[in-house]
Length: 453
View 1 (cartoon, one colour):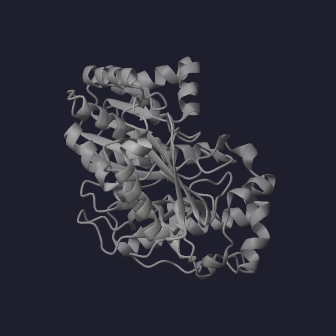
View 2 (cartoon, rainbow, N blue to C red):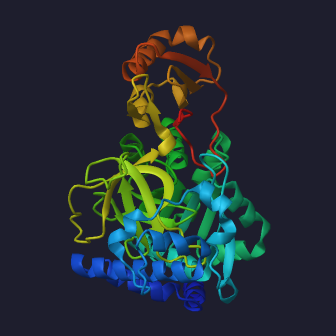
């Protein structure tokens, strides 16, 4: 990156608090367990006190739960008594969730991606945005990208891409930040060839991409024996990164993949460091709980629903927000020495878990083991319609294939039997051969969907 571009970018960052917050995060990542816990509890208490004093929705809730005492002190031992916040509640109580000091804040509306249904609107402000930017800078640093280094974004949100196309200001900003954007919604063979040309010409330090998009590009490169520039790192987000995906991407691009987890509602929650032993929670900007089905806190190794409290959004505090994902804590600490809470893996959306005819909950990832390695399948999606009906949508590698039910009958019968072993012998498995399987409105690709509640 030329000196003047990097200088301009840093000067723009200095106009706000991004660099100050970045420096704080750099120091905080090395706090010991006791200091980290004390600072997190202080930041959580400050948020709760603000919510009690300024957000109508929380006044009675925080009092009744015992979190705010009669002397307006915070009692964190009662934190788990606060009811969960959901998307439906945000829609219903939108006005009551607004902080009453919005006139003193630089705030804006944002919208969730809507990957599992109707998007939800919420409010964020400049302080939240600057903290979010600072977290990205720290994550980038972990993955060997410094401020202003070249980055290509293979991104999937139509809204983000359209905004970028429509505003000259955004295009100039990307130029100054040394970014190039590629549309992950358009992944035809011809366009992927163009993307490879852009990557080889631009030679990015880092590629930031949707999981499925960079995986598709990697497969295309390998299948066509093409040559591609090897960046220092690839940062994946917005989807479940399966081991076979990581292996393929790293093999093709000859670099390491760093996985990051977050959402529009609460920003980037956790990211892998250089040791790749789990995702470090940004503990001083997010308070994360993993809740088992019985409502108790999950222990390391136990799968539960991820519940997040953003510690930096005072404009519309999201406290104990059910983000809609499943995950589990790692059993040990990372070799890097950072003691931030460590998520072993994010197991997918709540709606990615199926329920078989015996009432047992099934992790949808198991269906990947039945399908992903079969050469004739380019894309697939497994949908549970009811307890006894599974639809498997398949996009074939060979678009000209005739009578796939006959040609691949042995494979299809094996898939059907594998699914029945998991879902029950009475389960009906139907195959639908389709021209394409489209991502959601947010650009995320979903391998498994359960319509059973």
